[in-house]
Structures are given as C-alpha cells and as structure tokens.
Image 1 (cartoon, rainbow, N blue to C red):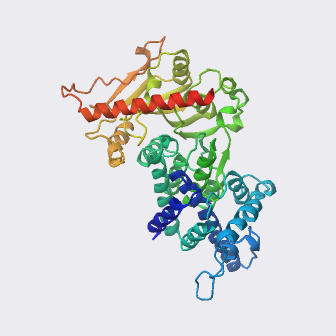
Image 2: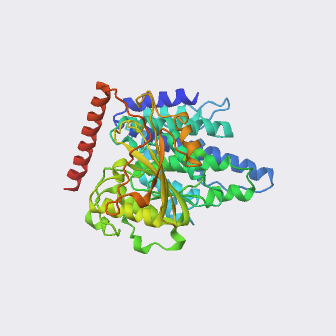
Image 3: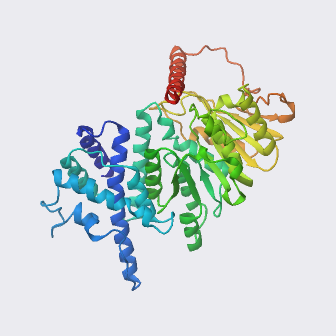
Length: 483
C-alpha cells in the first residue's frame, strides 16, 4: 500500500506547477509525511501516558493538529467533505501553519528535542504546491498511512530510502544524496561501532551512514533501557550544508526511529580546525564527502593543508575530529591515492603519520549511479602511524549501473578477507616503508592479479568517456559558480 501511495503522490506533484523535479517531490512529500508522523507519535505518547496514569501535553496546539486542519474525520472514519481545500487550504498552510511551526526553533529548550527539529525543518522549506486542490489530494493519501507499529515504520523507512535513491538517480549530483546502501552496510560492518560510541558524519546528506549505523547497533545486542536512551540522544551526530539534504537526512533518521536527530544545518568546512577541542571529538567517523567541489580561499584558511578540493578539506576535518583510538570509514575519489600536487602529498603524509590506514577498498566505476568517478574507501584508526596497508580491489564480472547495482554479496569476500588482511587474487599488502617517501604514492596496483589479454568492450570505453565528460562539466560548473 505504501509504495502505491508514494507513486500516486508523485503523479499529483508532477502535474503541479510548483514542483518541477524528483527533488521537489521528495521535499514536498517529506513535510506532509512528517506532520502525519508527528500526529501518530503524539497519539502513541498520549496512550502510553494514559496507561501509566499520567497526563500528556500535546506538542502541537489544537488548531494546528493534523486531525483539525488536514484530516478532520466524520463518524465513519472518512475525511469530512467540508475539510479545507483549494485556496483556503493553501492560505492556511502558507500563512498560518508554517509560521506557527517555525517558531518552535526559537522556543525549544534544547537542540536535541523534537520541538527544535519541528522548528528547524519548517524554517528550511516552504510549501511549493501551487494548487490547494493538489495539496488536498496529497494530504488525503498520506492520511491513509500509519506509523504506529514497528513493522509500519520499518516499511516506511525502506520506501523513503527508495525515494531518496530515485532522487539521487535523477540528477548529475545524485551522489551527494545517495550512497549505495550495500556499500554503507559493509563500511559499518568493518568499522564495527559499539553502543556508547559517538558516531559522526560531517557531510551527512540523506543520513544513510547514520541510519545504517543505527540499524547495526540495534541488532548488535539485547538493548537495555539505558542503551535505547543512548542511541536516541548521545550516539549520532551530523552536519549538512544544503537545505534539502538537511531536511531529507533529518526525516530519514526520524523514520528509522531516531526521534530528534542531532543533525545541524551548517557548512562543516567553515569551522576552524585550530578551535577543535577534545570535547568536540568523536569515536567513529562514517562519511562520503562531496568530491569535485571547490571551496573559496577564506574557507581554506580553516585548514593546515590549503586546497580548494572539498573532499580533501573534509578528510582533514575528519582526522581532526576523531578521538585518539577513534575509527573511520571514508569514501573518497581514487585519485587521492596518487595525485602529485602539494596538498595531496601533504594530506597522504598526514594520514599515514597520524593514523593507521589499515585498509583501502578500491571500488569499480559505476558504483555510484550517475557519477562515473572511481572511488576508494579509506579505513583508518587515529593515534598510531601506518606500517602496512591492506588493499582490496573489487573486480566484478559485470558493469555496474542503475539496473545492475552493487550488492552486499559483491562485497562479502572483502569483508571476510579484511578480518585477517589475507592476500588473494584481489587483495595485497603494502609496507609503507617501501613507498616513495617524497610523494607517499599509494596507487592501488594489484601485484597478485593475473594479466588479462582481452580488450575492453566498446560500451565500457564509451561509458568511461561519458563519465569523464560529466566530471569535467561538474568541475567547470563549480568554477563558474565561484566567479
């Protein structure tokens, strides 16, 4: 039912003049979905309070509750045909509901409360639907959804993830919204966070890493009441620069079961690394920072190694934000391993000298749908220098793409061999003492792979040329935006 409902909503939004893309569909679905979720949450809390003889005070004032403005019901359970619609509904939402909900941010006692999240979410977006009749149709469909049971919430979170994936596939910048979930699950497995760890993603996007870490920790042991509170309040932390990604990331975590996610809407890279104190650091970093972007000179001043490359600045940030003994899994372009510019050489030196870069997973092209760049995952621990790096090159017998995506099965051999740094046709060890100490070149050159004489298929060459063209266009657009 949920899946068909989402499809019907997209069909309605597609016809509305205010919504022009898959990104708009997700944004508009999100805010209506959030208010329905909030209504179900309040009802559950009121029921729980009643069972213990306590009184529950609603977060949302009567006039603005879902059952008053969105879905007033008749005795038969159907929405009252006199419910607001058309211009009346649009005017109420735009000029009363949104201004009311925005005020929650200023009035909330703390940033880690659901009240603060309500205010922040509705400060960051607006109702884009131009037709109040389309809005009524969307509300009626979402009112049919329920968030009362664990199974319902679980199904909804999976469908929301699917919407994020579709949104990621829709544009050239899809990678910033969606990292393949099999890859994230594998990274989380290898990093192996524990309950009590503070987990951080400074480029949170749709919060895929934090959501998967939450799922991993929920299944890691029989949770005590203290564990549940720890996971809700003191475990997951994120920062996100872009408004839409911030909204989607927050909503994604809420649907996965984190009631008031500690995600902040800010540009992580504007923080000066010299100001980072021990209390600001984290046990775990899991991230896929945006690559290809360019940062202005004033942002670069916050970092000891000056570079305009966004991903290189993020990597410095992550190293600094880790506690001694902290662990990280970070996706980065594979050119990081071998670039010869001063910043790249200095950054590799910093990583190898301040952290133990114990594992590098070399991923095939096409891992990120819509982004043809080749990537690697760096696994490292802070506090001791690197003596040996274990490389694993993921070689698949098929080309990855939208209809042929990466799976957890593809990565199973990597997970097994990584535990012992075993060598195979696809894996090898590299002693850091043997690399060039002036360049710290870490190119992923597999000495164990058998030479293949077969020529590449024409479609593979064309796909790589297309990916390179897209990457060049993206870099050019980034430069033009700075001019």
